[in-house]
Length: 386
Image (tube, rainbow, N blue to C red; front, side, top):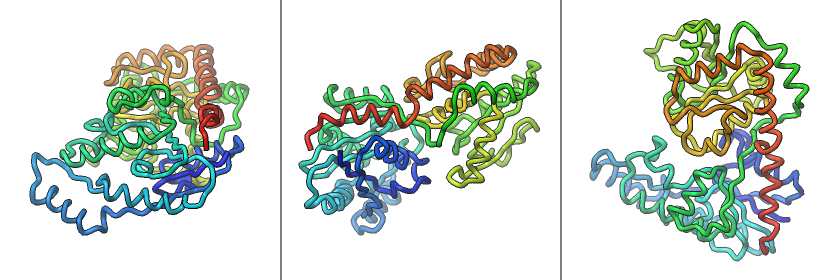
């Protein structure tokens, strides 16, 4: 099977989009797919005089109720992006156009089947993520337009969660028959076995419960709630440490010694990869009390180390976390006392912890890895006529 892999940024750079583009392409190639990259697509929105004038008009002159205008989603810009794809597809025989996003294919004209695999629709992101709060009417109209067109053009619309898939159907009228749900995998290399998980757990501290938090946005990812969980565990005589990776606390926030802030770690480099592996291996639980989330790949990564996940039930998380199997969701807002009781009960009983750890690892093995996800993807794509 030949696939034209379309992305705006460099799909072969493991540092882009946390490595998701890279791992999707890699997993498809490992299944025997021939990949031809169409990436590094240019945008008009910051160079074009019309867009600059629109930006000044909406964001400076006619700024209403702090609404934001985003020129990137203008049809003229998305057509400009699509034209670059069309040019590279010209005279190419057969194949399927595949994109891990809907933007590059919204205005694409081609007779080839189009497939996308993404984690959200514009409808679910609007007023959910901070970047999508307070958009003006023109931006909302343009965004809904490109989303609907992408879904209509696609022969296959794959989403990483039921939350996003249902939005495609309910908000944009997608044909349910072409909408599929396939989980994302873990953006790390994993050769661990159940024996490795069991043996590593035996080496973990039995006196200090170690929690691992990985996220680049302190507020949205719920770092404050994670800190409160660690504080309450210690108050309840469960000696605990919380390791925070990816972000730093606000300048005015004083943290106790058992909160270990590691900052940003570049896991694409060997030194960073080794440090992350060490943190995962020594930790007992992964905690991310996030306020808004599509499909956190870090959950799959945590499960690959046998870490049960402590999180919230928001966005697409319920398609990843199964309560008491590979973690536990505590409502849309983290119930700190319930989380503390849950962690304490498991941590105090090593046999129970081993059981939960193995269940988490098996979820990674069964469905939260790129190999199984790519296999499902190909099973849907094989019937498309190219």
